[in-house]
Amino acid sequence: MKRVTVFGATGSIGQNTLDLIARAPQEYQVVALTGGRNIAQLAADARRLGAELAVTAHDDLLGDLRAALAGSGVQAAAGQAALIEAAARPADWIMSAIVGAAGLAPGMEALRQGTTLALANKESLVTAGPLLMATAAAHGARILPVDSEHSAIFQALVGEDIAAVERIVITASGGAFRDWPLERLAAATLAEASCHPNWDMGQRITIDSASMFNKALEIIETREFFGVTPDQIEVIIHPESLVHALVGFRDGALMAHVGASDMRHAIGYALHWPERRDLPVARLDLAAIGTLNFRAPDPARYPALRLAGDVMRRGGLAGAVFNAAKERALDAFIAGRIGFMDMSGIVEDVLTHMSSDSGLIDAGITLDTVAHVDHLARVRADETMAARAR
Ligand code: NDP
Image 1: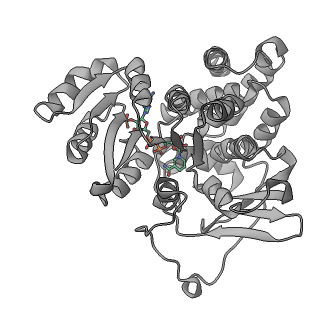
Image 2 (image 1 turned 60 degrees about the vertical axis):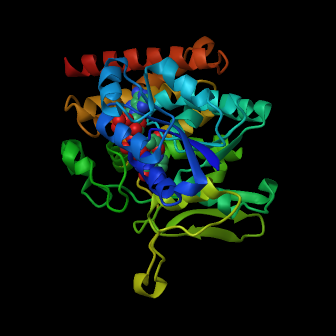
C-alpha cells in the first residue's frame, strides 16, 4: 500500500487528490490530511479515508477538530508545529496543496524525509526555488509538478535532454477579463474576478488568473523547476485551455500537451508516476472542438508578466518579496480595500523598494531569510496601500 499525505486536503487540489485516492482505497494508506478552517470537510474526509492523523493549521480550531473526530480513531492536531510533524511522518507520496507561502515549510520538511513531493504549491518554488531543489537533491527526494502547465512540460520532456530545449511556451486562458475593455478593469468586482472561464479552482488562484499574477508565478516556477533561462520562457493566451504547455526543441519541433481542463490529470500523473493509469478525465473530441486559438498577451492588461521578468532578473529573495506583496495585495482586493488594477502597482512598489536593498535580497535563501523578507514585504505593502488611500 502506498502511504500518502495530503496538505491542503480541504481545498480544490486537495479534494481532487482525495477523489483519486478514494477511487482505489485498497491501494492507499492515508497517513495525514491537513486543512485550515474547513473542519467539517477535514474531519469527514479523515474518517471516510481512515487517516491516521488530521491537522488544522489553526490552534484555536483544535477543539472543534477533536469533537468532529470523536470516536473515529483519527488523531487530531493543530498549529504550525503539528503541520511540520505531519510532514515528517513516513509517507511514500505527499501532496503539497496549501495555498500561499504557508506551504513552504511543510514541503521542505517532507523533502528532508526523502519522500516524493507532488508540488501544487507553486509559491514554494517562487519564494525558495533553489533551496527546495537543493534540499530535494541532498535527501534523495523527488519533486513532481502538479501545476497543469508544469506537469505538461514535465511530460513533454520524458526521454528528452533539457539541453536540447530551445524554449518553453506556457499557455494562459487569459482569465475572467481577457475580453473586457481595458478601461473597465479598474472597476472589476470580487465576484467578477472569481469566475474562471475554464477551470474550477480555489478563489485565490482564480483571481490570480484574471490578473495573470498566477501566470507570473508560473513563469518563475518554470525557471526554478526546469532550470531554463528567463528568455527561454514564453506565455501565450489560449482561451480554450486545452493545450497546457509546449516545449520547443532546437530542431524546431514543438511538443504540445493537450488534454481536458481537469486537474485530476496532472494530479493523477504525479500520483501514479512513473506509470500512466486510467484517470476519470474527459477524453477530447478534437473534431467537435474544431479550432484552437492562440494570441499574444497584452502587457497593459497583464502588468504581472513584466514583474515576473523583473523578479527573475533580480534573483535572490526577490521571488519571496514578490509573492508576499502579491498575497497582501490580493487579501486587500478580496476585502474590498483596493481595486483590481491596484494590485500590480502595489506589488511593483514593494518590489522596487525592497530590491534596491541588496544586503536584504542577496542574503541567501533559507527558511529564515524567506520568512524575514516575506514579513517586510507585507509590512511595506500595507504602508503602500495606506499611503495610496490617503
Ligand atoms: P484552495 O484555496 O482551494 O485550498 C487551499 C488549501 O490550503 C485548503 O485546504 C486550506 O484550508 C489550506 N490553507 C489555507 N491557508 C492555509 C494556511 N495558512 N496554512 C495551512 N493551510 C492553509 O487552493 P487551491 O487548491 O486552489 O490551490 C492550492 C495550491 O495549488 C496553490 O498553491 C495553487 O496556486 C496551486 N494550484 C491550484 C490549482 C487549482 O486547480 N486549484 C491549479 C494549479 C496549482 P481551508 O480551506 O480548510 O481553510
